[in-house]
Length: 406
Ligand code: PLP
Image (cartoon, rainbow, N blue to C red):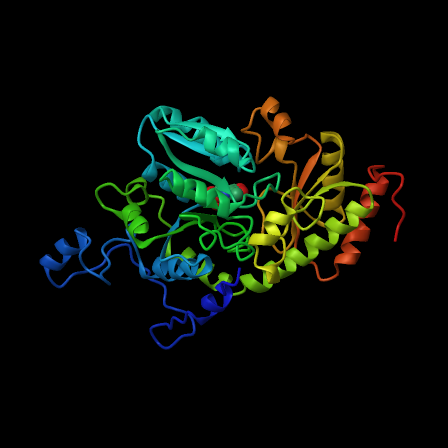
């Protein structure tokens, strides 16, 4: 991969009304027209550069959308009030009643619940499959299948999807490949690898300050416009539009994404390597022991590393809870869901972000109750963090006996 996303984002310059270094925020829900005819034409989608109503689009949302299109290398991007707002709009735009979706079995719990439970209303069914097994993916496609859906690096098990191969498969069957790239912005350019639609929860790394929820869809101009269509666009009609004030603050935070992602990755890689040496059960795509390590290496932008997420299996929910509480006490981070914050965040997905997945299914996936998901923060001294985390594990007798401090 040699797509220079961050350079392209940095090169996007927007000036404020008075020459400010940041663009002015569009603080209006509605826009005036000098002629009634132009208003009619705008409704019909025939007027470039005219704004109508902020649920449809606003200058601030368009600025952020342009930066996100540069991130993924797509023609266009729309922004939404949350990652789920983006996901539900894309799925409902691509799928009609009685149709079918092929989806990875390891995905964010909210997406799983939307596909499995909510879409029942429309008799839309989903086959949840092992996305790393291309034969099974292909066998699951039926004449009713409207998309292959996966996460580039999955929540919470950090499975790595082979986007190039999945894209070839999708093209062969004439269906789009939809990839949620929330866990790996900049690390992986899903669209450049062949994804037709790329979704982000901006709530996480892209905004990076855990102060809002937001989402994005990066895709062709035609698809982005179809989502905004006043007659049948899911984004426009379901109403999950992002507020302009938030769009402006996310754009400012996005300017530092490249620096943050490198540090998140560097710190996560350090801890994953050290804890694996200590004999702990660590999952991190940067480790050679990770089944998706080679796939990740082939499709990543090497300078951004393998991402900021890792998991540790500490054997039981009791161990996981005790360790998380102690780590929080020791100021190592917060016992909280979500990811991409400057501070390390940790939670046990089996009882939190993936609790929508029934227990038996969690077990089948290898999502054990003792699994802790870590979003590693921007700690300046990661060796000190390692030593403090290690001493928490020693206190709780979680560290394997063979571990000797190096
Ligand atoms: N996609 C992934 C991979 C996520 O982890 C999440 C939330 O945790 C979402 C989508 C949903 O995003 P949001 O919470 O912004 O709606």
